[in-house]
Amino acid sequence: MAAPKKGDLSAAEREILQVIAAGDVQEVARLLGSKDVRVNCLDEYGMTPLMHAAYKGQADMCSLLLQHGADVNCNEHDYGYTALMFAGLSGKTDITSMMLDAGAETDLVNSVGRTAAQMAAFVGQHDCVTVINNFFSRARLEYYTRPQGLEREAKLPPKLAGPLHKIIMTSNLNPVKLVMLVRENPLLVDVGALEKCYHVMDLLCEQCVKQQDMNEVLAMKMHYISYVLQKCMAFLLDRDDKLDVLIKSLLKGRDGDGFPQYQEKFIRDCIRKFPYCEAALLQQLVRSIAPVEIGNDPTAFSVLTQALTGKMAFIDAEFCATCGERGAEKRCSLCKMVTYCGLMCQRLHWFTHKKICRGLQEKDAPRLRELNDEESDMVKETASFLAELCLKAEERMASSGCPGPSAPDQLNCPSTSSEGPPSCNQE
Image (cartoon, rainbow, N blue to C red; front, top):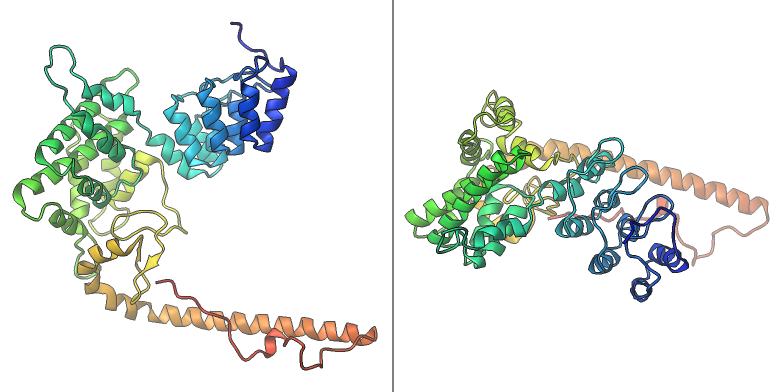
């Protein structure tokens, strides 16, 4: 079959592009059943229906088109854009993941040499950047679930592929989070299972370094996960209380400021033990971390995370003090300085946070008073402004012969209300 030409569309194909823009999934499904519709047809700019749906952020539409054979790597667009690039531009992480699962190539570039991840970063869609940079095909992992060559058994039991792939795909590389992912899956809380998993991770690390297009970032990530799994296995061998002691060790803070020294040393040791000394990424990490005294910024975790995920720390983002999950909304009700993603994380962290909680309260009291004073000034200024507006409105009504708000059933001006603005403490 000849490749479709730009702008060479049937009436039904023009209609389907209009229906995609309107978001009518059922009508698109009906039109796809028509012989006059090619799922990979190109409009005058070289955009396929899948590109349109991805750019519009329509996940159901993208799924439908992929089921009908849409080419996820088509790059006939005038500027070389692919469906993955449009997904990244839309800011939809679910569609970005869908394109990757369908086989989207992450190293394709547009007419100015930018990849999908670089384009998403350029427009500030950092969550999509993280999804792209952390993608690892499950099929690539499942290769090790089948005996190869003269092997009598596979290196990785098939039942472990799912839990291990979940760990590989996580964008939160906080070691506490990784240990929690291991702990929550009974299949992984086993010495034999962890041994098989970390051996496979080491093989993947070696493969990433030795393949033709060497991927140092993915190699370092595989090594890091392997190191965490080995530490989990060591604790399962030596401790009766399984992984709880490891989590507490990673969370335990320094008496003076609560800084997790063991966690910092753990990550530094992991980087130092990366087996490929000639890797440029390793040298970059060492140069960034080595001169920094433990307890100062940047931490080893922040440097490693930025290198592996391309994810910068957001000034306005809140991270869980326990597992590092972004978007934590629960605050310690005492000091109001530390955030958690849930009650479980708060309970895990309390044993070490309680040592500095009161100190944080006392340290932050002047700042809170200053903020309260500023808030009070803002309330007064706003009330004054509103009172002035009300006065001007009354003057205009009086000059036009309209009665003023003197009746008892009239609403009070905000400035004369005896109640202050409602306050909400997020705890």
